[in-house]
Length: 270
Figure 1: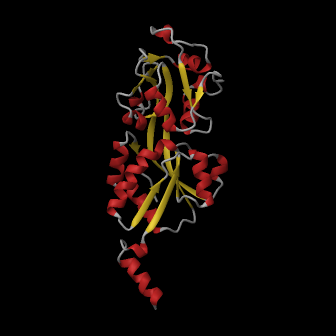
Figure 2: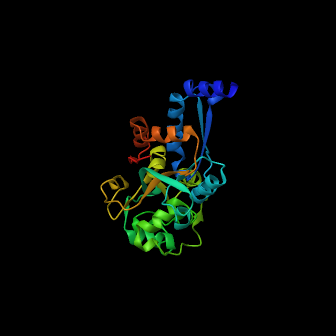
């Protein structure tokens, strides 16, 4: 009888501490700011639930591994699942599309380069900004690990980048926050971020055009570099709060928050 009473209370008083559920989210670092904003808004409407967004990037592979291990309830994936991941008992929901950005530090006097010049910079063939009308200081090339979604999409978006061997001098930064910090603090540098990081870094570093095209043209299909942000859950997920959270993401308020993070919301079915 006591169990029945407790169950009844949980069904009728969702905000009670006895019924509170905790959702743990982790994965692609580029999605952390967006999901943090959504989580805060969700908890305001559902005070009985707690959403913990891991503020340290696990990377896409790490997020999926954590999900299958049960240490997170939702994985953030900024790239499509691999064939091996698709064979796992998981469900992926595309929630947003985000433009990728080629960015430089504020001291770089360049606003536009060609695709080939981008590749030549990353291969080490072009070593200074002098060729673009700048000074003869060495270009500091900032890159990301091959498993990172930012790097994966860069290689897929520009043909000459796909199989390019990067210069040994390129600085490999493991986390998206490391890239952000380097673009803020270093000089004569070029790196890769996304539109969300650009929004956070307004005035701290700047985007450059590639072949005369800007990342703001991603929605129209003129800019090739971008991500498909997905939330991934287990097929066997039983937490009511996980479904409620996904419903909130696809609600008008959730879609508004996605737009506020410089991403394009994608409608999806549960």
